[in-house]
Length: 434
Image (cartoon, rainbow, N blue to C red; front, top):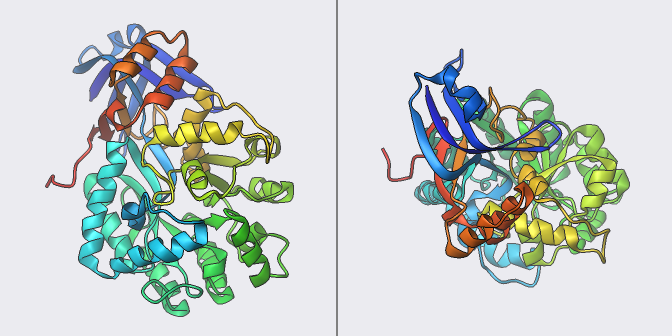
């Protein structure tokens, strides 16, 4: 076993943040040999019971759960910062040409290294990830994730229509490939598979029906897609599926709404849709930097709370503008405050942090597995330096309570705050490691 002495940040089941200024985190194997958190709490309370365990002293640092990213596009790493007039032109001008390059397996392997390095540099230890329509893009990402010991979930994109050559797949073969990938990767170590229709307009009814059948056959795999991101997209879905009540209900009709189903954006929805998310156990991946960048709209936090469905935060790289959870949390605060198109709310710093850790784990059906520093959770955590920059040091020094400390980190923090990352109880591996 090993132990770490620093301030500790964790969360109760109801999302209440717990902060121990002088804490002890004890990590060791469980009965199955997994590296888990064995104890977490006040140093004064726990030290005597773990007197024989070597302690790494981390004065002035904060130990926090590794961040979870609920929606990110591995092949869009090089698309960040590409200007466009909106979502659909951005897809046509940048995203699809970049994704077509993943037909080259060597390119996919090289980009997996870059992508995972960026996640870890920013303290993200678990992500729900889109690959491309090429099956080997999944292999490239999950092979490298496995080597690094990461808990990673990924899926081959399904898009058999309204897509250009190079990324469009063939209906029957895409479903055969998806099932083969499920059998190859799902439940292998810390890895998981997600059935991944790109979005309803890119999938024929036959492809959506096949995806739903696979979801029914493999009840513990994840499902991921997009819904109601952009008003032009919503109008297009209405034309393509005129008998459906709403964009979200299209997925319901094909058996794609259930526990472990995560839908990015969920902006242009109504209370009936919100109730559908709640009642099916599906979750929303709130993607604020992407929504602001593309002018898509603002996620309605008041509606989410009032109706009560699961949601958490996502970078949505490359529409999203940063891998940094700090940037994402700050953008979510801006989105919450907007009060012209929806009710404005002021999100507490503790809640913003919960959405990117324990709340995101809850949305994925991984509550108590990742996203927290509680006994039994897997040992994925970050060491944060609240004095990483001169201005941040000044601001955190004067924080009067936990909310002020966390908000200073959210507003002023970036990857420089993330001093170390631990994955499965060990320092995270970089791409150059063997």
